[in-house]
Image 1 (tube, rainbow, N blue to C red):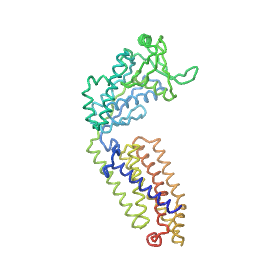
Image 2 (cartoon, rainbow, N blue to C red; image 1 turned 90 degrees about the horizontal axis):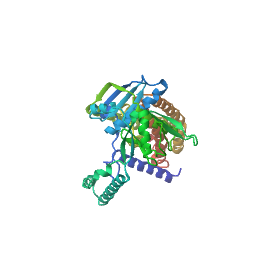
Image 3 (spheres, rainbow, N blue to C red; image 1 turned 180 degrees about the horizontal axis):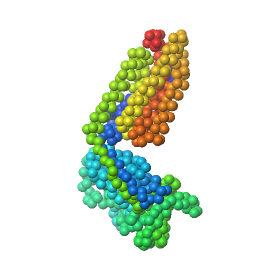
Image 4 (spheres, one colour; image 1 turned 120 degrees about the vertical axis):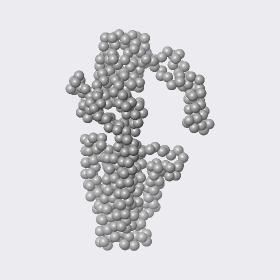
Length: 459
């Protein structure tokens, strides 16, 4: 590689590190319009509530129990999301549900909401006159909001101005209205296939009373959509093709098999919820979470500094370059944690700190090989290339075996283990990139320079 290309690559590396550093801590330079999203913290760092529910599957057939539990999990996820918990962790463990609500301040209300029966309902379109009024009001609000944005108004000022619009609440209304057909009339929902196209669809079966309501509803809504809602969220809006009698209906659309299964499962969960009982509740206070976070960060910083000190003392100039590469490695990893985003827990931070050791381990192997080549009297550029090529098999095998174990832990482990395995895996992949690509290009900068001749810097 030419020196010019090497300088370009090193410049790109530093430029990338600069922007990723501002992504991690945008207050440093306060670049305009630069995103400032906080790190996602798990329950043990942010505080919150840990709940365990026992599901009663005594009335569910053995072969349908896994589907019933999956449907129950989906319903609870929707409920806690509506409560305002961002990305709750809801996991199935045999006949139990484990719910983690990070940052929740009112666990009593959340428990009450989770325990409610999922609500399934069918809605029909409002009259054309009512729909037009809503759409006109929405357009008026959108036009006004656009004008205010063009005037440079803040979001708070825009909201205040929009509140002054007469009957602005009308624009927030749904185009569909409630009917008397709800989930209590649905016997079951299952996946079927169109006899002509063989595309998957969802089959519905109502009880006797529901069949009569459904027939009346479809009779007056031929050619119009009939929306299906679970917990107030629309999950499907099929168009009624004809009046339907007999209590059987089907929902067709551009479904994949998995999507059709999910829809059927959600309908069953809304119509026939699995009874659940809260058997355990633990609350992690925000103060305890803050202490855990501070201790974790302190451990990571101390470990990082000790590694840098060790490398500089024992490897001199090589250690300085490795420390610089390690700093860029840390910036890349933290920026990925923030953008993916990764929910950081104590276990996840432990995996990230462990990956720092894996990152420097690769540099130690490379530098040891390189020093051997220099001791044998080879030139600096030859020693650099030979050091990397000879160390690569050990780096590859060592990291891949660790990565394999981390993948196994992620697939078969609990949520606590998954966090550790994921951050460790991500750290290993970035550490290999750091050692093989970043450190190597840093070393190439010194080929043909006066510093190359100063032997004590490299041996």
